[in-house]
Image (cartoon, rainbow, N blue to C red; front, side, top):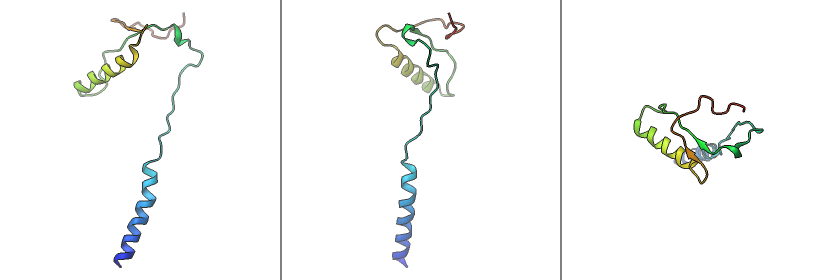
Length: 86
């Protein structure tokens, strides 16, 4: 009885573990015709991304840190239309 119970629980674990470690499918969408090479600055909105002010600051710092690289700088004001055609 105890052996069959161990075998059943091992079989259950063996069937559930592969489903928990499967990779996520990442989908992204952007305008493939857009010329991102001409962009040299960025601006972040002051909207709250979460209810936690510390988390909002961490998100803002992480995004600004990833975007701030040589040749790119932050703007103080946000343009009315960020991706308007010229």
